[in-house]
Every structure is written in C-alpha cells, then in structure tokens.
Length: 243
Image (tube, rainbow, N blue to C red):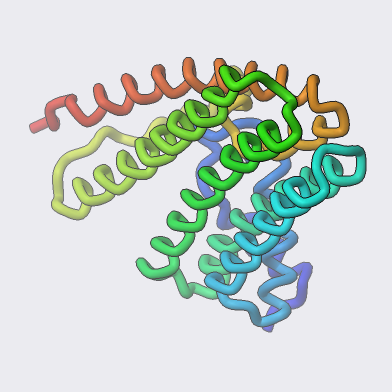
C-alpha cells in the first residue's frame, strides 16, 4: 500500500480536466478532496463508503441548522460540514481512480447522493426561514425556484456527459479536444453556480438578513448561468456529426 504522500502524488497526476469548472472546484475542493481521498485510501475505505460519509456529513450540517436555528455557532458549524461534505464528494471518485475500482454502481450512487444533497440544502433554507419567520411568505418561492434551477442544471450537465460518452462508445465522430488552457474568466463566472460557494455562504446564517440577500443574489446568478448552459448544451447535441 502506498504511503499518504505517495497517494497524494498519484492523485495529483490523475485529476479530471480543469475545463468547465469554477475556481473554487479547481483550487479548493479538488485539492481538499485529494487529501481526504489519500486519507480514505490509507484507512482502506471504499469509494462507496466515502460517498456515504459525504452524505452523512452533509445531513449532519443541515440538521444542526434546523435544530439549533440561525446563530454564530450553528452557521459556522453548518458551513464547515457542508464544505467538508462537498470535498468528500470529490474524494470518492479520486479513491475509485486511485484503487482502480470505478464502477457504474458507484457512479450511480454518487449522482443519487448529489441529487439528494441539492434538494436537501435548499429545502433546509426554506424550512429555517419559515420556522423562524425570517422573511415573508413571498420569499419562500426563492428556495423552491433555486432548487428547481439547481436540479435542472445538475441533470443537464450530467446528461450531456453521458450522451457524449454513449456517442463515443458507438463510434460516432467527435470534435477534437481543445488544447487551449482553461478559461479563467469562465472559471470565475461559474463561481455562483458552484455548490461550494453556496456551502460557504451558510456561514452568513450568523446574521440571517445578510444570508437571505446573498442567497437571493446567488439564485439570480444561477438562473442566468443555467439558461446559458442549457442553450449551449442543446446546441452541442443538435450539431450534426462530422462525416
């Protein structure tokens, strides 16, 4: 078995493409996930076990906010646990690559848990706001709409990758991968749609009015990003294959 340092080095050379991901995922979540993946590898954890721990940590963070309500301690603890849960979500795939145990079942479980976390996070915002009367009933539509936008974007991004993969497996011609470096501007523009940014924003529950404002702004940004991405993905799939 490799040492912790060797595992980290191996993972550093086997990272996913940086293209199409935000600066947070590139410079925070993936490196943190790499360390957690190396630790999980040394602990002989399977990728599915790491996925389960990710779900448990996220659920615990949301439970803290619901049970104890907004406050300094609960806001900080919830944000830390959500960030940790997201990093573990990156770690499970890295453990699979490191141990060469990737499987359709593991990928399926990962995506199912991801979907559940997206729904649970926005549902928690709605519950906490309503329980503590932090906003009028009209604002309650924001978490519901945010939830829809987030799920549609997640499903759209997941499906286009699966469809492209199926197309390549069927032998259909595809465009040559770009050799240009990842766009920093795009990576910055995608920040509001990164789950990690939303997770960090939960620390603002120390002052609920500020969290509500930031959450609403993130929702507006996600609507714009989702529309742009959905149009882009639809056009890519509509493009006729090269002979």
